[in-house]
Image (cartoon, rainbow, N blue to C red):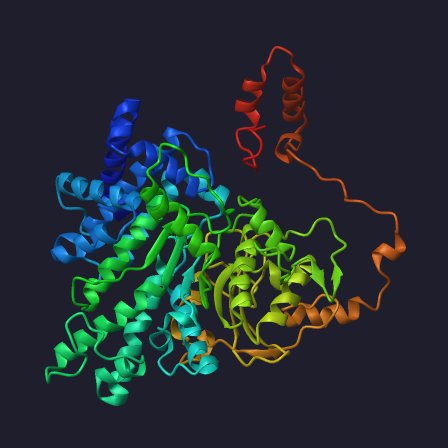
Length: 613
């Protein structure tokens, strides 16, 4: 999608954001309180686990309104019946409702139609999400990099959803996949890093396809409803056919959606993303042909999946608002037991989630202080290393998802993450514990690690599917109710250009070799990890057998420590001696202040824990 085509949309969003920022910053404290925004600020800060000030809230709120307003123009929401708009407002929490109402007003203020981008594109949902992801990434690039938030290509999300759907059929006896996984007692579907909802609306698309498949098989849309275990559940009366094929389809599809939505949960830290996800799902349901108004809705919470529980309500916040935004999110995070967990966790290496809850999970203690799997333990022994990279955000999200399946005893996990845990020696505890919990594990290494300068079989630097330096991998893991002690692990890999990898994912369904041919075929091979590292990569396991015949470095040098670590290399390395002397002279010059030196040489910082320089 050419970014230049987004100029009109982005310009409109910036004007809206600036206008709302100005208006909110001009309010007096009394105006904030009377308008209810003072308590919304406190509620958002609490649910995001931060003590951020009013300026932070204004940025979050105005950006969410701007993004929502433009997305509503692109979809376009003007074509929705009143029932869709009412559903969005009525089913939203107070914080999201305030954003949506403001966005509806701002949409009417956009003076002219947006660019021809939407009109010339086949799938407006994709256009809307692509635009908003581009806009939000530019609007707060530093925050995006700090938290490691990179949006998921649609084909990656679709591939994972297809794989999970297949697991539900194969391992849990759900002949209709997602569509058969409706009873609440089976456990809901969670996307713990929601973004703009690409996994949720990919799941909805799969749900509709499942119903179509069943309709073709049985030649009766009501067969699906009967399979779910319920008749007479339609808001329009009985699910018995009335002889009108189109009406029968609408009734059956609406009933299925009504059963599915209450079991769908998303957690998202950024307010703008959470609001846009609601809009995109509403648009998709409208275009799918459901009958409005719907009684149910997905439960999308603005919250930190890895945050601690027990947020204390400020005295000046209404109890009902606090309950709807904060308490319900905490109940979903800690009390519900999900059986399907899918998504794309953040890629941040320096974790932004230092909660006690996340740390204890990594070390094998749950919120009730019960013993669970510890990523710091292998074969009953604790890791000896001090530097282990187990505090990466993606590892914490993986542990959280693992815990959801672990405590339920059965379920499916489908993630695309950094691929480091497949091979990193210090992450052997992650691999060992995953293999102990899950009965089936499929690992698709997408490579593309720019840090390692991975070279593909064609002799070229391999491209990643995300715009990150790390390589990535798709993991689909399931534990069936009758799982034994052993885990069946399969491994495959994709090399090449980004477009080729996405095409391969698009062409392959959940079957081992799909319908793809030639270079697009994903070839799986069985793999059995072995001690002491339990590598998920067969290549490393083969190499390690020879490696372990040599003497250990710790035996050669029993007294050891971390090697020297350099910093500010760009300052102390120069192309010629004169340039280096000039820099050192500036550094030693007492007449140059720290502020001047920072501006001249140290404008950036690798960690938000320290100022630049």
